[in-house]
Length: 113
Figure 1 (tube, rainbow, N blue to C red):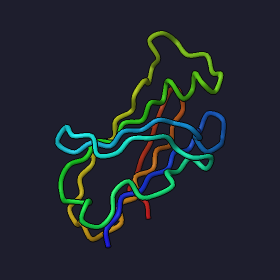
Figure 2: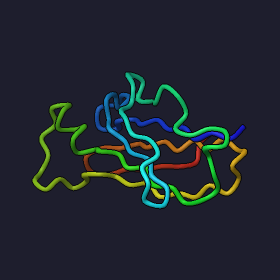
Figure 3: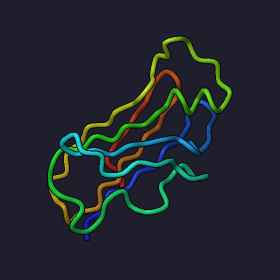
């Protein structure tokens, strides 16, 4: 059964990004939104089973809001505000893990396991 998961690491402070708001979209339609848990993860898969379809997805992370709430001083406008990861799902039966490693000045992602 295919599934889509994520987690976020705060590389500026060296910890999970707890309470970071996210929104998942496909074809402009919001499929799921919420916040990461204390471990920087989402408690359940973003999508699984028949809900995970081949296509292009966008996963938005409200990084500037997260860093402001954590007490970091950011420029105005911030260098990174909302980080959008645009990725494709070709095999809906596979596990797609899309992590984000983020600081106020950089980010990185990869297809995890």
